[in-house]
Image (cartoon, rainbow, N blue to C red; front, side, top):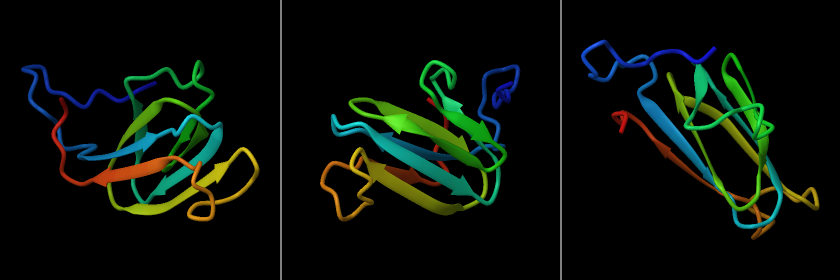
Amino acid sequence: MPRNTSTQNGSTNDALPNLVTIVGRGVPSNFEISVDGEIEMVDGEPLEEATIVSGGVAEGTVDAGVRRFRFSGQMANVRLVDWNGLEAPDSPSTPTVNVNYGVSQR
């Protein structure tokens, strides 16, 4: 069950202050994100998007879309693999990853 990260008056709770965004490049790719805190998917349905989120790890697939996750702590590891099994940075098809610390919810 997703954690409620907003207070009743709508202000941001600092429980998951960081954001990681994975942007697909139109090629089916796998990703795995691990953090030393907790992580949850934002604006998505993990079951519909074949994404598994458990504890401090999120893994799934992306092709021509965006996956966003809020997390606490620090980014521990990101692994990206394209449909041929080539890892970033050896493949120009792997998704791009943006990590922002201390980002308020929008």
